Image 1 (cartoon, rainbow, N blue to C red):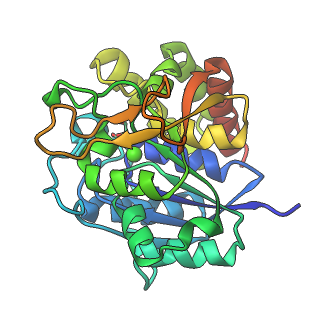
Image 2: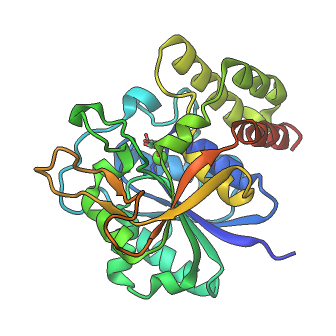
Length: 316
Ligand code: BDR
Ligand code: CA
């Protein structure tokens, strides 16, 4: 059977690492590229983590280095409080063996999309800077993509500094997000969906047990231990595996129910809701729907998929 080619544009990131591990465990997907963007930690670190994740999971794909900073705004802050200084919690990587692609992320994305003849599923689970640049450089990109799925936005926010409705990925680069929403149909897995899929201490215990002491399950075991400790002991939101839910939604359509709405991104730096994905739930704008918004989640199914992922690596 032909596998679906996928690209994961990311800012690894603990939940980005789960997302890559989950996609790699899916027999229907072939990861053709991982592209790195600034976000949870600096671009220098997300780039290195992308190379190391490909090495550790044995993913034979291109790794494209992307943007170091948002399109217009300064890089406001990282999320190392949630992800650790290294971006990947307590995971220890050896120095990467894999070399970055000679092309930048946006060209890697375009080349692979064209090569896929329109079958590519593109995931963006960090700020949307690389995708916005890809669309600026290659305006015909959307026609080569079968689905474009992001983790970002939603009906509420998590960037407490603004006191408003901005979610981190969108808030880091609202200019990019606005451009992307105007140019592509987006499947948006936002915070309302990811919070509804939060894992319990018992879920993490089961995942850790499934991993056992297997060497090939080192990454997912360490991520699970870190998530459990940081959420249950330290009170961070690491029990919410945001990015993996976007991947899961494209593996099994029963995990997430999407509804089609018009969404626009507020990118005005003066606006109190800068970075909000404003969802026209009642059709008041009269604008055509441009976004499939994740509205309902089957949490037990999602948790089972993560446990199956652990089993995949433990039995490898
Ligand atoms: C998003 O922000 C990052 O910290 C996570 O990796 C996820 O992509 C959640 O708001
Ligand atoms: Ca991320």
